[in-house]
Amino acid sequence: MLRLDTDRLRLVPLSSAAIDALLAGDGSRLRELTGASFPTPVRPPPLTEQLLPMVRARVAADDRQEGWWTWVVVRKDTGEAVGSVGFGGGPDAEGAVMVGYATYPNVERRGYATEATEALVEWALGHHDVVRVCASMPPDNAAAIRVAQKIGMRLLGTVWEEDLDDVL
Image (cartoon, rainbow, N blue to C red; front, side, top):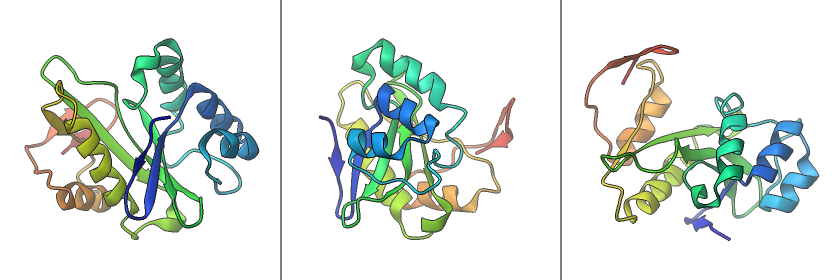
């Protein structure tokens, strides 16, 4: 089973079955599949709920997709799910992947997003076909910008995205 460990965290990619359980709010099934306990009521981390059905379909259709989508971030000491981190699929033709991250509100500002994102970026850059990791975020999301800066990302500019307006 694929997983990554940091000093405080364990990262586990979500299988299609785990995504089904998360969307259904089935905490006991999620614990069985991921080894993590989720906040009650069980719900996806912020900003991920709308994406998970698409992610589920991609992971279910091709097991080679494991790792290139959503990972649950789990505290090692408590087994508590604190958020998620992931990519928007495997590397594109130019060797780039897009990373995203979110934590549950009750655990913000504890460095979990930074620690998990850094581990996942290192994992991705360890693949010979990945040469660049990108992120896209609204300019007013100071916490997301801070995470990106802490792991060594740099601002390349602003672009317009249909659903979000201007993003960094």
